Amino acid sequence: MSTETNTETRTMLVVSAHAGDFVWRAGGTIGAHVVKGGRAVVVCLSFGERGESASQWLQGKSLDEIKSIRQAEAQAAAEALGAEIRFLDQGDYPLRESAAAITALVDVMREIQPDIVLTHPLLDPYNGDHPAAARMALEARVQAQAIGVPFGDGRVPTKSEIIGAPPVFFFEPHQPEMCDFKPEVLLDVTPGWPRKEAAMQALPAQQHMWDYYQSLGIRRGVQLKRNASANLGLPVDVKAEAFMRYYPQVTDVLA
Image 1: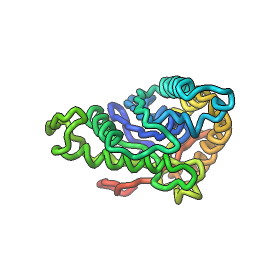
Image 2 (image 1 turned 135 degrees about the vertical axis):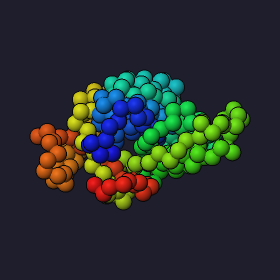
Image 3 (image 1 turned 90 degrees about the horizontal axis):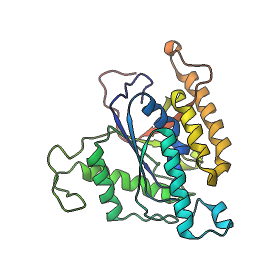
């Protein structure tokens, strides 16, 4: 997650509980990754149809209509970021952990062979869907490494189809102080910020989030500059997103 990392040809998997989470929490990261030549694949476990679509319910829309609206918004947001997107339609409020959802994630991981995984933190007292998504992503990562765990269709994977050990990063929740979230990684996402702005605007059902995440990108950018070496050559208007690591960093140099 260093600003000096060459992302060309690397694949990023983003496991998102709802249709908008990947944009607010990691849109700049996804956009910057794609700008630098990487591939990004987003998996939305739900459309956020029940808990994160209040404006549509207030307009009297049906459940199916709302799901269709939120899917179209998420698709447009992913396209703005340059990412691929998959929908598992597992329902929200609550999003229940299930063997079927984990198996679907295992299949995706083996298909795309991610070099990095982004998902929610494991604690969120305001929204249990978020930690549920994180737990399923982590469980799927473990199962996808095991050659004895079959694909969803029952086929046994070959050696080349099991995954390695991609690092997992938790992106910043909406109320970090309440989720025990402490920024361990500050990523310069300035190259991807215009894409994040476009993606946010593709989510009018949650327009109230736009200003908050614009401001957060600026604040994290200030913190990034204060923690960066003097010769990093950062732009004046740098934007940043924050992450926590789940597994240890493996490296041959401390940086």
